[in-house]
Length: 213
Length: 213
DNA sequence: GTAATTTATGTCAGTCGATGACAGATGACA
DNA sequence: TGTCATCTGTCATCGACTGACATAAATTAC
Image (cartoon, rainbow over the protein chains, first blue to last red):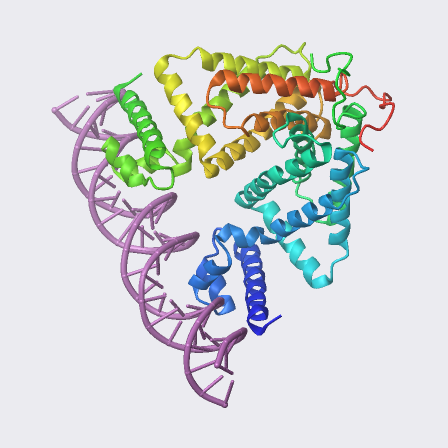
């Protein structure tokens, strides 16, 4: 890796760290791009060459987590049912987060605390999740052997994403609390859904009775 | 109703109409507040006395629809199960939308076309829905006789909201297409969920087998 | 090692969304 | 009619964000 690339990485990390610290101490809205840039000793213009917006820098770590989740998902064995693959990917990602070095773990925790306590960032995080939903559906459709616009795969992802969003409702600072909340919701989902609900439909096997009326 | 109040209502409507037309013809980002204000012959400052932001005016009709949905929900008979009350409220709201006078219906359709074709507005609409989710949960918890932070009521709302968001995935311009998509998803949900899944839990009645692993 | 090329950064100017403060206009009401 | 509350326009300002251009630094070619 060349010098140029290393330098860029250092600047990027410094910008994220400075932004997180300033956001947490002075507040997200009260912090200006100029202050962040000054802290890292770059011009404000340079900030926007690394991040598309003020929100972007705050959510960069959240976006990283989502990429990790996606990576886990595509590597799940095909033997797992669609919903199981999703929930196992989440467990795997939480496991990875637990085993980070202290520096990185600290940054992740800072970012999580910031996002959870800042309404516009919470909304932004949910927007990120929604944007990734399209990719999740594509992967699920591939697994289930259906078209990406098939309602079934979309529904499976929707239920899972709904659970993920519910995890973010209560501001749970620490990772284990988050994992516990997640498991509670999975248990609830198990009790609510029919066995095999997420398996590709075998034609002619309609449910016995209406569940919602 | 006094003259003053009527004038305000007219200005507000004019701002919405001008904004929708400009957004649709020139594009959302390309349209400035100044252009909207000039069209209605008010000062740009006055625009912000009626709407908190540029996004706000574009989503005002969407917000109105959500209020209608909420109003329907609180008036559903307690005999309906939680999820049934939610889906019937949606049907009722779609019914109301179908019976509007042409002027109002045209505006609604304009707003829907605009939101569906403008990514940041689509994100904003989903943010609105998420913000209202809190109120939905409160109402569901009231129905189910549980605390508002009970996971069960949150899960029921989450499944329903997930379906609502899926309805917005494909840009369905006309109302009947939207209704059809909605019914398809409801049918899918019926097939996927256990009968009585949304009823308040009667203790000691755990599900027979795991549904997701 | 130097020259040529690519790429990152700083500076400058500018647009646009959004807000506070103040003054004037206009409807409400006694 | 006159007082009062409220709505509106004007002005000034901030901060996020962008395009254009020049400079400096790293990479590559010779």
